[in-house]
Length: 115
Length: 115
Image (cartoon, rainbow over all chains, first blue to last red; front, top):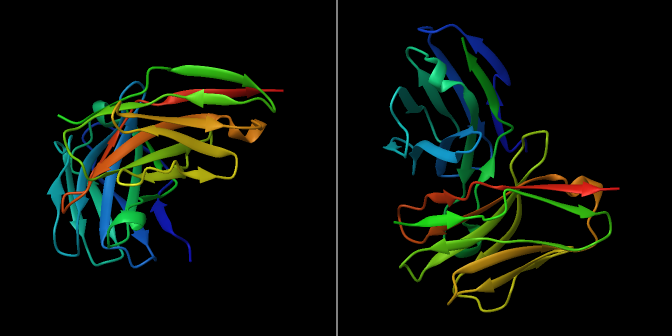
């Protein structure tokens, strides 16, 4: 049981390049999330997926697209990277149900630099 | 709007002593969940402790405990017998119950445990 995994761990892009950040979870969770973390800004939600086949915008969706490929995988795509997208990106997942199961489990993060 | 405020950007404590990190939040909802997450230098986001708003009893996890004051909308984290490994950023967050369960995050408190 690996939990939430993210690839790559580090990436450097040039402005205008595209790339996809991969996230997978093996905990049979329904909900998955993509965050970015910037100094002084805390964690901000980019997109989330409440279940397979559905995605919704979060707080800062501009410049990103997502795909919920199946229940396990939730990818984040930057079509044309900009320096403002330099950040640490976290994927998270959450099990179904209510109350004590309302906990998000995080991946190790991807540090992205756009030059 | 729902918000989370962590008023202490940085704190330090001597090893083996006790430290309290403060968190206040604002919501008009009655059904919600509160969390403290720890982010060590490795960048992994780790759940420390969780509290359901409907429970009056304060949550405790080993050396970590909370002081949950629902009327005051306060959710402080107490770390007893601080250890060097507790050095990290600590984030307070809450989630409204219901279908759209997104986490709302504070900006974090950087805690340094000194030998």
